[in-house]
Length: 273
Length: 227
Image 1 (cartoon, chains in turn green, yellow):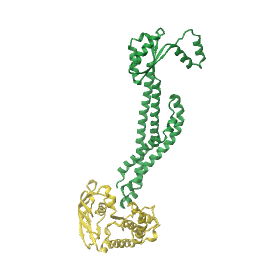
Image 2 (tube, one colour; image 1 turned 90 degrees about the vertical axis):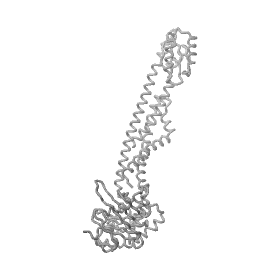
Image 3 (cartoon, rainbow over the protein chains, first blue to last red; image 1 turned 180 degrees about the horizontal axis):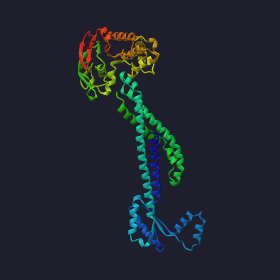
Image 4 (spheres, each protein chain N blue to C red; image 1 turned 120 degrees about the vertical axis):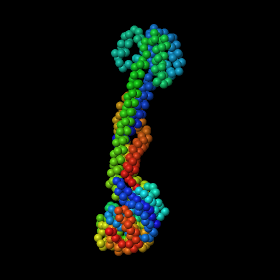
């Protein structure tokens, strides 16, 4: 019960982290179109306007060779050998480019196809979409697999918890059979006889939820800094603290639900009024 | 009034415990149901308390048609019947007073009633000085008297006694029988299932004799005669 409750909460948090990771990466995706050095600025700006008119496109950013150089230097300002090499060159080796962002990540494919078919090929040096696409698809695939695995694990542990509680309640019914018989004989109401056993199941669920919540807190605190390294926007610890009560609520709901369900099944099967 | 109308009870593998049993018991009667072990006495008790349902036939208890009761109706119905058994069925971890009070608690009676009724019931069975004792500290006769007090505390219409003297010595046996007679004289119907010939013959009340699940005799002022 404790484990299933723990995995259930883990799954809740994984869902949040996964969504955040996908959003974070999707935000970083764009298609960068690099033009050959002999293509004039006017031609690039013309192409920019044409692309901006595509319904799938959110915005297009023009980055001239000079801007590209500034950005590159900024990015590598701490790497002396890189800046030194650049300074030694007579000409700017960087290319003019357009950064295209789509309204919907699924539409990058359409935009990429347009770029390939729009007779632009001879002006283009390279299009960087393909590399990003693989990373995104891989990430989505990994998250999906982990989610499915987590769900299966939760289901498996939930079945295990139900079986354990079911057996515990069954044993409790057997060991109290004499008292139950006396209750029946003196006309105890069904809820009076069954109540304590349902309560026992609920109590197991409640304890499991609280204990697993207690275990979850240090796990979240421990993993949070690592997650921030991969997804800067995702502060798991802050999310956990902000949603403390709703997470605890869902965890209790899940565990108490399991506990009550198991004991009700056992009572229906073994406790005859 | 209690009516058994062509009641048949068959257990698994076709074992017939009762076979077309019919009888009527008027309010206030003292009826002994007698027969050898396995004749069907305890089955009559279990059918009357709705612990089991008949395979065929109808059982009426006042306004209740017992064979048609649903499980939700059992608790209220059972409060009309007090039951005592050979093995007393007292709760070992509760005192005498708590055992008796338990029957009122489960019926949802107010605490004031419990405080008032328990000493009265203890006085009726002559155990006023034993209210704080645990069942293990009592003799067999005292345990059965506690069971009677518990059975009577809800003021049932009928007291059902299933071999109540089976575990008692002759002295305690007669103490219990005297108590049952007193309860009957106070107006409650008493049904005594027993195979004790001496008790039945001394009582001189109505006797229903069962053999192989059938009623073979039903006599007012009957005697225990089994061939």
